[in-house]
Image (cartoon, helix red, strand yellow):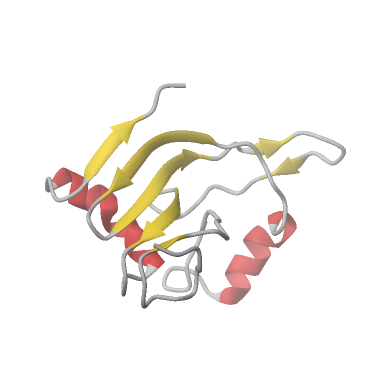
Length: 118
């Protein structure tokens, strides 16, 4: 296992984590910018609800707040991804976006979900 996000030739932990709120398959770049530009680069507290994984990929199921309070109060648009998550590990040759399939795999007993208590 190596710590190199871009090298898909090895098993890898994802170091540059992020939560994808929208993907080009569902929104145009123009729509994404209009919706999310004001929050790009901001950080907020998230709640980790569960670890979801199979033999190829692992992700954290997360809840994102609707609002960031601080010097400048900022509204956070709702994620249009069905599975709001942060990918944390990928097996050799596996692309990170495949984490989107984990909830369906859990319902088919092909992946596991471990609920975390707050």
